[in-house]
Image (cartoon, rainbow, N blue to C red; front, top):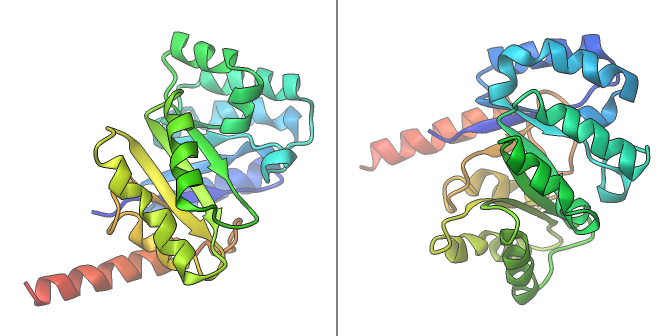
Length: 233
């Protein structure tokens, strides 16, 4: 079964927790909690409320510099990431740029037995294959769980990002790679079919990333593909 993680972002505790309940009730396998959309003072309270579903959640606190919404200092964000780690989520999404700035956060996660995924986003385009492969290898130094997301400007970008899975097969990686934008929508679907992504991302209602489709749409697409495959053997 193709697994789906629903990305959730809300400015208040009440709305976010309501969205978590809705997503899990609408067949989401996992949820990504975008803590960077909350006020920092609310984060610990929300963490307490999420204890029971933390093992199905990805915790993300993305800074403005990496396309997120957290505008505090680097040290403030590190303190919050360590607090998140204490709640034992399924994964913490940590940006490659953050690791380059301070590799100690990785040592902390390892000492706490916290599962983490290293992510990198390109909001401008999709680099040439040689650069993508280089970036993948650089990220692999820090984790076997990797997320690489680019922006598709043309259809060739879609196939270039998906081609990373042909490299991944021999590297024992858990790789999630797809492209953002309208042209990249197909890669969100194919990354679990053509590639070997453990899951893909969807929205609950409105997208919080370019080209993100709703979980209902994605489930319907996967269902249609599975029915066609069954029909044709």
